[in-house]
Image 1 (cartoon, rainbow, N blue to C red):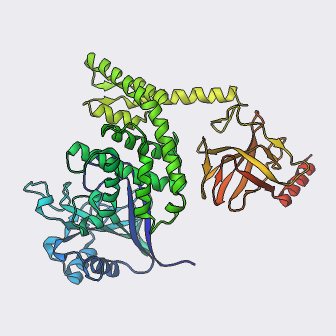
Image 2: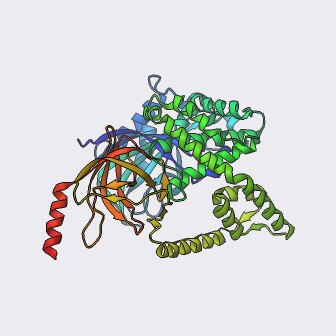
Image 3: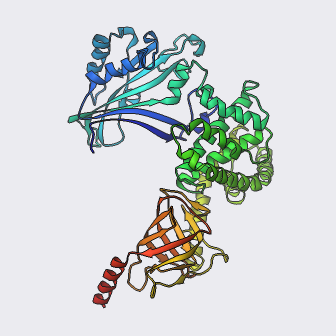
Length: 520
């Protein structure tokens, strides 16, 4: 049922500033974003006092009001200053004038291209001089760790046509965001989000496995923080159905896991160990996310496979990287070639981000344009190869000889209950399991599903077991005789080797047959 007032807690992954992870108190790739929203209901005069009450009341968060600094939009030549918010903070809430700061569009105006947008009020907490940079002009908005933004209240009151023209919205909205980890950092008065109790418990497990102890050295702390952050992100991503791959979300996951594994090696650990940290991550978070416990074994399995895969290539890759690096330095070069970076990626599985990080540690940079050119050339060659060997691949996936041709039984059977899963595909890479909510491709040893051919579209229907349902939305057949059932797991999980029932939508099949015959 539609609601005008909503509160949320969102799991978020952000890797745009991944190079800062471990070095600052407030950067993490995984975080939980709390929010409250109003759709045409309450607006500034309610949202601002409520935000203040929530942060300062001893019945709620209980922060010291003397340490809080709201910011408001200063205005520019496109939209006016948000004097309304300023007066509510000062006249209604009672915040002294010298503790309300005005910032420009970059900090205090929320918009993404065209559509609803508006000014915002960020609320900063002063942690004290001991957390500051020591500069005489250190103030709210400084990039140090003294003033931390804990909440952002966005006032969606304009519509942007995409060309810089703003008109007032008839129905105004509230959209807020508060980082749970940042709030916990402030409430527990700890140095960083990594020192929050539930996060530190994960770091303690990493320390136990690596023998590296937090607080012994800055370099060691950075590695411990990176591993802690990245394993948290990885566990939640896998739980939500993402699998390591070389594209899209899967690439983000692979990048995080391999970066964490490399930092483990910087701490002297060469064997897979990240999968052992999963137990602690699940323990610290299953209270609010019980699905972590349900998928615990699966998550460990995925991470261990990725670690073992990376371990097979990284040692040889590191040696080659060091040889390449020495060659560049011998020539007096400060730019690591795109061709070398691509070779590390293509042959040894090094994400470009990992190469960039290792190169920057040596005071050099990577020719990323050259790397991208090599990548595009590889994609061109791969497309041509797939066209020439169409019977070996489909949708970017190549099946080996161990995946048999699919036996089609659909001329006599509309459903069977003894088909075997011989291949699973997620994001163009073969997988061992499809979790609930994940889209993918299922290949069976036999099927009643008709694949699209001869001018007739493929069947739809359901592949199922007692506790799993995979809804088939399309079927394609490659020249190698493998029937690819495309769809989504809507319940349970599907594993490679499972025996399943497969049933087509009979009514739809008959309608298609009639239409096909009529067309002839």
